[in-house]
Length: 386
Ligand SMILES: [Zn+2]
Image 1 (cartoon, rainbow, N blue to C red):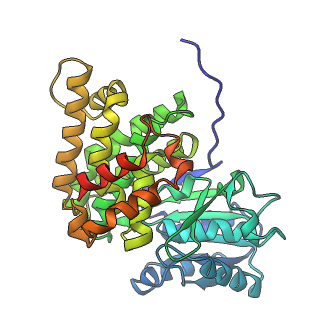
Image 2 (cartoon, protein in one colour; image 1 turned 120 degrees about the vertical axis):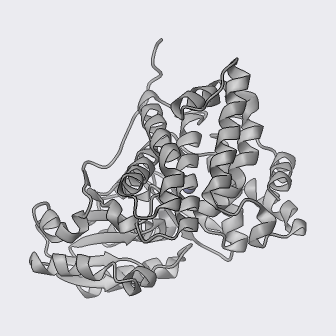
């Protein structure tokens, strides 16, 4: 079969090493010339003692280290500007993001703003960033967003709205995957972030316009790793095999959706984050079931392939296999322990129409969905998830 033309981009270098954070200084010293580092993270990780060994390792390797720990969930522009200011104060030559998606997103944009006169307002959208950035290193501490290998940063710009900067400059120079950093993640976060990563793989695999053989290969392997290890990672937090598989799976899913974008699950999830501050992973986990059933009308042949990837038992025709895949995902989500209904996380019945109206603004994502989503469809999907 002829291959449709496509382009595939990702980061140039990924090191996978259990316990690698303990050797972080030597790993970075061998790769970069600059010796002044800004570590971008959140106060929770700092308090949990996860940043000190990384900073100590950098200092032992000859780096001077400043720490910016003011990243919050759904970070607003003011956090980004604070980070840039701190980096300027210490004349940072490398930006290192350590944490969940928010810390990595802030590190990525800070590295760009530090070497550019372009305003942030001018960068929102796809392919708007001009010029270069500072050296950028990313170290994820959750297995979920895949932000370490995507070209996307999401910033909260108003009360409830989020904007994205999508540009190739946001691909980091170097990524360290040390799954030991994820063992302290509580089960409910492991579940929600892990399901988010599975959503990335599934939505990349069924994405309408940019699906391609490389993103497909990554999405399939991501789903296999994530689907086979989600429950073990939730139930046995120190299980090294499960943790390494989840982190690698989340990164592979990130590479897939960075080139074959996510769709309706994320479009429906963003308003939940905006209005109710439900974490990104959880809001995606809550919307996945209804969207899988809705999209099956067009995506059944692909879902049938994913049933094989996950080793789902059963058989029959494409429709039967697709239904078995959707049912398998339901069971995984039920067993993971993540909240399963919108009403369980504080969403009220009378807000569903407003959420549906907001979903329609996510055109960047909705265009990728295999089935068209109109406002009444979005409302029906929220009702199903309620
Ligand atoms: Zn996501």
